[in-house]
Length: 425
Image 1 (tube, one colour):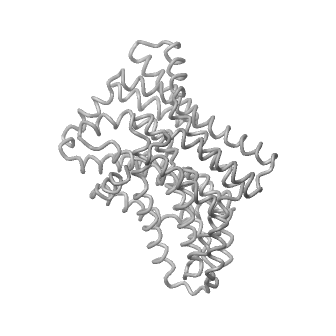
Image 2 (cartoon, rainbow, N blue to C red):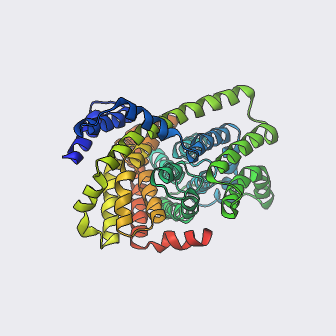
């Protein structure tokens, strides 16, 4: 009955069009009412404690860093460098998109920010070169999925806080899966464009490649600083976010000199608005998470899935399918906040490594960003690229299918994730 009240209140509120954050609050209040322990003071205390977390300070700073990079010219120089490297290959602009997405992922950690930057910079070039606009938009949307996987990652920060898992280990464990997903997109783009009769741009000379590398060096140094700092224990993920924001501000304002005072105000405003939305979601979810624990829902879920506890791979398959279904209707952040307190006790009872589960969980939720009908990244690409949502959805389908295949291969072969992860940390 408790599970029915939880799901009924949450899904009912969402069906009425109530924003996710308020739906979570209503869900927590409904559980309190059902258990005859309603207390407005408890609600308020949990909301305050939900956002009172030092690791969560990484969220606003990584968002600020991403905004500065897109406005201050760092993202454009990354794209120019990728263009000089692989732009001359048949279908080269697609490979430029994938390579640039992997590099940008190591800068911002936000799928939306990366997708917006890539769409504005590369979609017009791909269409002008003769590539199908729907397929090009679909590739850019699928590349945005890599953003929350290759560190730094806002998704890993939120999951790490919600699940009490080391964020540094999550960051380092996400490197190889992100690269593998990029390789899957690379092969898919090659297969789809192998028969296209398009004339690629001329090959860049060694001088042009070195020049683009020189101009992008300051931007490329950021992921190196973050990863080396985390690996050597110089700073925590939260401190890494501050370093990223300050470094991006220094490069954009002093080195590249493309960030004006007016743009800086707009960047801070945009970052504050996005941060407010995310942090209110986290704070509201704490009410539901606390009530989930008090109502003993994890133990009830474990009892329902008891037959699968001795088969971790089968259990992971079931969880991934559940997340796929949820991802079609919900955004990444609320999915993490709602499912993590329910699934983590189950994962621990089955003996699954929490870091391994966290990486797969975030990959699944990231792919959910391009899963119709909601698909936040699809909406961003459609809006920035002035495309119909149906066209972007049609274009992203083959890439999304390959990403799910890669994800399930990681379920079957956990060493793809854990062997490189253990080497990194």
